[in-house]
Amino acid sequence: MYHANLRIPRVRTKELFLFVFFFLYFLPITMIGGDRGGLPIDIVPSDVLAIFVALVYIFSNGTFSQKNKILILQIILLIYGFGLVALVIIQHGDILPLFSFFKFSKTIFPFIAGYALTRWLGQIVVLRALSNSAVAFIFLLALSQFAYHFNFRPRLGSHFFELEVYGFPNSAASYYVFLLCCALIVVRTTAIRSMLFVLGGAFALGSLSRNALLIFILAVIFFNLKGKVNPIRILVAFLLFSLIYFFLNWVNIPILTYSWDAMVSRMENAQYSNDISNGRFEIFSHTFDLISTRPLFGYGFQAFSQFSQYGTPHNQYLELLFKVGVFGTFLYLSILYAGILQVFRHRASMPPDLSLKGFYIIFGIIFVGSLAQPNFSYSPTGNLLFLIFGIFSYSPRQNVKKIDYCSNSR
Image (cartoon, rainbow, N blue to C red; front, side, top):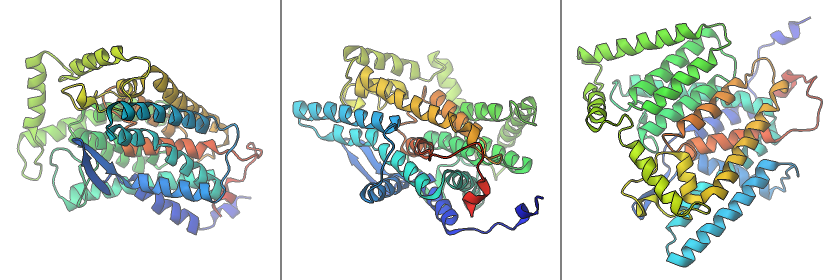
């Protein structure tokens, strides 16, 4: 008998709390902004929320499993990083590296926050709220861009209603693709999935971000590799969407103010310099030269601009090597590996309406995208990644083979 499952679901307090919490957590806007040594120092909502929840959990005598390898590795990395930045401050008398160290190490708070929320409210409830909030955010973002602002201006997704997004819009566009993957953790209807793909494609394409467009295409392909939808049809639909989009701008339809000149200028610059990376390869080469000078311990969170005419290495892995050297990079990558392994171990305990494919794709495209931009250093992405690790790091002792998942949402 299955009539018991036909009850109309009611929204519980904890589901509503989690929905609002994650929606605010996703906002890539600056709450507190400033400038120090020519470098921006910003606090985003996920920073504040993660620190608040983590501190509440810690001061309420929250405990952790002794086998929590991710937390242990984070503490080791925290001590190692603090030692590096302390040496730099003693040698140069400049506290600027301290801000960079905080940005590097504060992901421990999202990790603890994810752990705490899961321990308090249950993993399945948390995962569903995470996915549902991502759907709501994407649709509200589309409403902001295409209804409130009512234009298709360059750098799509650069504003959330009246709020300017944190960081360069290229980074925000990639972040929206990560949220698209979060939205598809809950198995959606074909219509909702298609709408999400179209919106994700519009933001990736309209942002003028090659990296965002690449990871969007990868996300679409991998989401449909073994699904009911033929991936070839998805790619064909995306290409047709792109052609129609550019054609409407080429004929200069007034409602579409997309800057075709900006795209042409990028192609002309690449052709003129004979460099398809538009200068990225030169930056990478210069960064390798700097790293080769201090390969083991790096530059201790000193600003990259102090040693280069460029503001950033434009590569997360090179940035890690520059800041903390080979040892610190190995520790950081070990944390990422342990986190992914922890998610993978939960694959058998997930209910049918939740798909871990979304998480696997998030991890994959974050690592690929980090070859061209600092995804871990971009606060919304780094905070999201470590929150996910925290959610999966708590495993209560129970028989996962026979779990009544409906009882978790009551």
